[in-house]
Length: 294
Image (cartoon, rainbow, N blue to C red; front, side, top):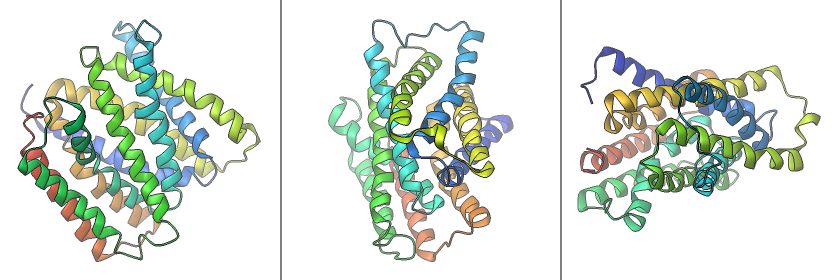
């Protein structure tokens, strides 16, 4: 892996902007689209560039091979379920709050990894980072402007969505010897298989009358925030490695707050800023002492 240059840093910032902008677009999409349909269309549009990438690089897709159940389970836990839960949660909370909550995924993942892997145990300093990071989330619950009796359940649903990302990540470790593009494309195809009947049965999307604004946001989520973003992620991982790529965790909530404030007129309090700083400090402590990523 090479040392990051200006182009690499630019791609990292671009990826952070794209993922940070996903949350206000999810909120806009929820104005017209139900969660199953929203998630389905998102992964449909994401699967197109991923499939074309595999064809271009002559990568064999193993989605329906002998290990199909592994790809199916990851598609369910790492894509289908979190996409639906995040859509449900973001519909009722500030978009920037969803971005902040999702930034804690590395911390949630570290707890699960401690119990379900052999080489990712929590040390004292890593545990300190986790405690500091989650204390930032606890602080958010004391801000009644942002989290109150009307939406706290949806905050928990969003956190549950991020937890499923962690579960999916742990399941993906079983396929760590497979080609990255194959794993991502194959699991995306399985997420489509799971979401299609749920959308048809429970939401009858053909009866919807979506606004142009919501439709454009949904197209953006699929093509840019999922498909294109994953391709950029592939490039960063290949050229600069996992450590460099994980730095997006610091930038996503920052851009999420910027977009939420300027484009959605969402109220940002001083407690939100303090909570964000505490969370980022926790992530920094954890990653600095996470030898598994070094």
